[in-house]
Length: 291
Image (cartoon, rainbow, N blue to C red; front, side):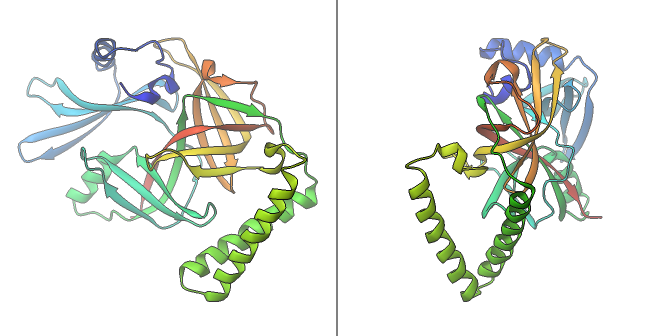
């Protein structure tokens, strides 16, 4: 079963037999459908909502009797806001014809990799020889374990200084990638100074009063991240099939805005706007194509 199935409110399904019955029942629901003709086969993706903006996608082969032979499925959460307009490339996964997006996002200082939810749309565009260049990405993450942290008190001046420093660092990272030696030296000196400051402060202060936000790869899978982000909005939704409640948290981390979905029972603490979320997420996203 998919590890993050519980993140969209299906925690009670634990065995393969239960998952098989669940998918069978979901296929009887009316969901958004996309079809792709490949040789004599019809590949079909059905997106079934369990609550507004979240649910399960089932992909498989459409038979002559209009029944779907499911090949794979994945839980999804749709992000409303545009997270990034940075250059994005697409790579196919080895196991099956699904795709990962790779964003050259300087704000986090790493190449941000995510699972593309609308991969069937990408395949349709590619088959029709339409433009497959990506204009923007709406990112979201699913989590099976998270905590709520108290906010760090900042003045308006400190917030503005932090935003300015973030923009300056993004510019330096972009210049360094293009081979600017001065930018590379500046970034190296900044990292040494930062390490020195943190080493001194951590002896007397709590770690999470020093680290305001965090966005870094976690584990051996490339689309898994450990994040700490400020909660900007909260939406609690109920899965119409199971009655479980799911939090859709709008987070801001490292100047990126994205959504995180987590089951109410997997979240420790009470989420409120201004507080912070800490947890490991599976990053996914919906991409917009250039016309």
